[in-house]
Image (cartoon, rainbow, N blue to C red; front, side, top):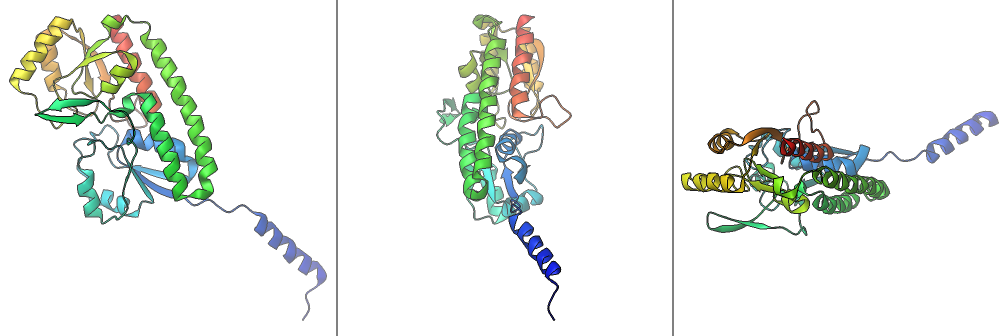
Length: 297
């Protein structure tokens, strides 16, 4: 039986429309080790990248205990990003438990680091994101790896990366303008641990702390006494607690030196969506504004 010409024409037209429709981009499932990195990946990836942060909001990326659901997410991920430089000491154990055979992308490779002496060892400072210039290197690495995972979206990833790089440049300019309001000799802060080394170098602020680059370290009585003497000698008048770790030691030192509370900083973990720093850009701006307000007092 022959079909009517009108019906044949309709079927042909429908076929052409379906053929002309753009292919739906697949969703990349990505795992990032902690919230700061996850936010940067989201900005580069855009709508077609689903990102899970292993460490939750306000969590400590040094001292994290993964769950079975984290292992499952890692096993199923198309791409996994870590910062590296010893930050995620727990990640290797999680990778073994997950059975994942994919190597993580270490986004901090190639960044010029500085080192500390801790317990007789020389270690690199892993907190590279506290300089926005370093995060620009992250962005390039993330764009390349996402494009490798889904080449059909490479132009989208590139456009997203360029927009975000422009925001990072603007952020650096704003931070410089905020801090220019305070003389360099007044930009001195006591914090819980050595998380702001790259911020110090990039923006000209002095930080002292009782703990090293990891919150898993412990300060001896002699080290605390030496720090108290240094704080008094340098005239540090303000201290900050950190959102992701214990504040008792830094408060004890502040009481001994007369340093006044400046508020809370977010050195290595974003807040939840209802908090003051749900994104990396807001985190850097917020930390800077908190310090400038404290310096002015």
